[in-house]
Amino acid sequence: MASQETLVDRDAVPPVLTDKEGSGPERTDVVDWDSPNDPENPMNWPKWKRIGHVALVSIIVFLVNLSTTISAPGSGILMKDFRQTNAIVGSLTISIFLLGFTLGPLLMAPLSELYGRLIVYHLSIAAFIAFLLGCGWSGNIVCFLILRFIAGCAASSPSTIGGGTVADVIPVEQRGAAMAVTALGPILAPVIGPVAGGFIAQKLGWRWTFWIVGIAAGVWLAAAVLLMRETYAPIILERKAAQLRKKTGDMALQAKGRQNVSTLVHLGRGLSRPLKLLVLSPVVLLLSIYVAFVFGLMFLCFSTYSAVFIKQYHFSVGVSGLTYLGQGIGMITGLILFGALSDRILKARAAKQHMGEMTPEERLPLMVYFTPIIPIGFFWYGWTAQEKVQWIAPIVGTSFIGLGNLFVMLPAQIYLVDAFGPKAAASALAANSLLRSLFGTFLPLAAPHLYANLGYGWGNSIFGFLALAFIPVPVLFYKYGAYLRTRFQVRL
Image (cartoon, rainbow, N blue to C red; front, side, top):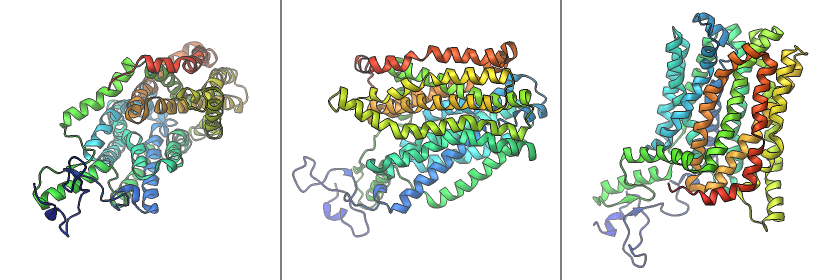
């Protein structure tokens, strides 16, 4: 080993040095931050720089989610251009993007741990832009669907590792507000997308719904290359350790937090953990099925609103995009209510029933209370559209669907984080995301035949009755969730 004097070279960045047994002047082989105030630690960056990284992450999360639905109002024009008449293919042009969100996270998360978050952002968003532009240049439906699926895989990276970036630069006590900002993208973008997409498709053509998002993502990528830096601490420390190994010749130096495993082993672990939880944990499986069903219903609505209002109310393509605002207003209202009520209910019930202890199950009362709103929304929307009641009536029905959806998906995510803790929460959320994206891809494919055979009234009533059947689920989790968590523990 090199001597300590060698390590304290003026041109080198010295590691934290301690005795191997923790009691003497000799150092360990672990390279850590120099001090709690080390400026290389992203937590110690200037405030403007840390907020800037959160802002950039929030913007790209918004853009990739915008791409999920911005093409929905123009799907009819797209189908005519490609000379397609199959309604299932029409739904697939929108939902296949989500299939990429199913597979992408299983690779993005472990890759970011191996190579850092920055390179994953750069390469994945570059691929997203390339395949998104390719969608606009597609000459046939097969080429379009393949390119849209690959674009979805690449686009999954910000949603997968964006929370990690926020955790890298924002302290725990300030993290809630930052996470709320990044959460606005998945909530607002699928609603704003069709509103803008309807007018873009009508005035410029459906291809521009892809090109405009691609151009915006290109501007973001240029800004990210110039302004973003690596935030993942083990990667920064590994680079620091590599510099020290080069300067000192001490090849035993290792960065704190780095695991010496092969790429294949690391990727294998990243793939297997969510799948193990999905198969072996009843809590993850059952709650994920419920969330996936609700998410699938949401995208079923997104893929059919334009057709319903164009056919029943003779809206133009541009105006049909505005009909998505009903569900969006419901979700925004739900977000405001959730922010105002969630922590209050958690603390009040914990103090009353658990002697102040906050259990994960106390996140679920709002889900219990608001779940019945979803079937009400489907009955209202379906039958008012079927009977061609004044157009505002079905839009009001969709706002109930959006409100109920939010009070299922958001409490479920927080419940999984609280129930599985920092070590397994990411895997639990990945399992939830996997099922959710699968339902979001394939459930909308049932809508065209269902509406064709049963009409909008009974067609939406089928989904309403299914939503009614799920009403006991959060009640059962509230009562028996703690037992299931402790009885069926999964070793990862």
